[in-house]
Each structure stands twice: as C-alpha cells, then as structure tokens.
Length: 283
Image 1 (cartoon, rainbow, N blue to C red):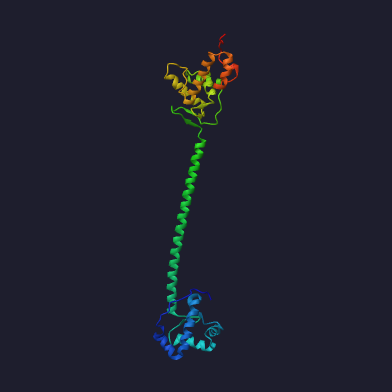
Image 2 (cartoon, helix red, strand yellow; image 1 turned 30 degrees about the vertical axis):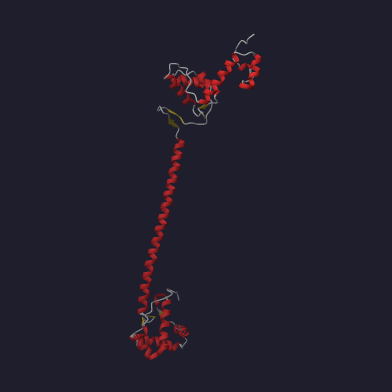
C-alpha cells in the first residue's frame, strides 16, 4: 500500500454522526475503533479504497484490527449494507467522506506544488537571463576589443590616416628625408635627426612613439616661423642642457689647455678631445 498522506481531517464530533451512532449501538466502542482503523488503512491506499475481493484480504485486516477475519468481514458488510458508512463496487470498498476530503487535500497540494514550481522556474529563468546578459556584455566587450585590435589605421589631428602605432624604431636620416620630401616641407632631416638623437629620442619627458608625428610637429613650427630651420619648443630640461653646453664652449674658448684640464672636474666636460670646439689657446 502506497502512503499518500501523513494525515487526514477528522471531525471532533464524528462519534455523534447518526450513521456512526447506529454502528456504535451494535458494535460498541470496539466497532468505533475498527471503523477508524479501516479509514486509516484507506487513507494509506491508492485511490483511498480497500480490497474486498481477494481471498485473504480480510485476514490482513483482521491482523490490523486484532480480531477474527470473519468478524471483520461481517463488520464491513454491515457498514456497507446497514449503516451506509462504506461504498463498494464488488471489488473494493471505500468511504465517500474520506475520499472527498483526501481529493480536496490533493488538489490543494497539487496547486501549491504547481505554484512553487512556477516560482522556482521564474527564479531560474531570471538567473539564466542575468547570466545571458552578463555573457552578452562580455562577448560585446571582447568583440569591441578585437575590432579595435584589427583596426589598421587611425587618424591624426589633421585628419590624415596613418598606420596604427607599433613598437617604435629609430628612423634613419634617409627615411626622414624621404618623408619630408613626400610632404614637401622645409624641415632639415639632418638637424631633426641630430636633435632627437641628442635627447634620447624623447618628446618632452616621454619616449617618442611616432617619429612621423614629430616631423609634422616641426613642420607646423616651421610654417609659423620665418626661420624654417627652427627647433620645436624645448622643455625646461632641454633648455638647461643646451645652456650648459653653451657655457662649456664659452669657458673653453677663453682657457688654456692647462685650465681646461682643471675645469673638467667642475663642469663635467667630456675628456674626448674630438668633442671639444676648435679654438686657439692663448700663448
């Protein structure tokens, strides 16, 4: 027997029911106990009904009720035919009151289970939707990054398309000259190359990333100045270095070789004689 429910509703005044009172008048308290034991067995059975056709069915009931099989058989027959407490179809018997109560309870339980399943499904769908949104956002971000990586050209401030920046490589003077010729500007390639070689290929305090952009900057400076060989605006560090070099040359120009040797430790003049400016020491 399959257990369907751990409980069923039981009226507190069931003993006063006319049909049950009639049964109690014949079978007494023992019959009242038998009745409720059979009701409990029905509640635990499929379809909320008990077998009355099998050969040994009443022997099983007698063991539960702790009485003889014939006594149970007679009690059930009276409950069907005399007291109208049970119904039979010749194969099984049941209580309409119990069946109606249990079917109502099952319907309520089924509706509650259905509602709980819908709530759970909604939570799962919401969670899946959030996960899908997150995956979509990540996918879009990845695609955007890939598109940016695949982009071959970018535009400078003048609208001219230039190759996307790669690892900086110091250009040769010939490359600078070729680029200046292409742009038909008045930038001196040699002077430009010497300038950035001397400052370690830096633009201000930052390392150079695009030498062609630096050429265009010189080109714009040349357009706005009558001196076409003008240097671009220097940073303070570059100005200080230039002034230091000029000071060295002024000092060296007015000193003897002996004086130059003594001054090297003070002004950090490089000992390479080839780097010193040409001069005629005083006799």
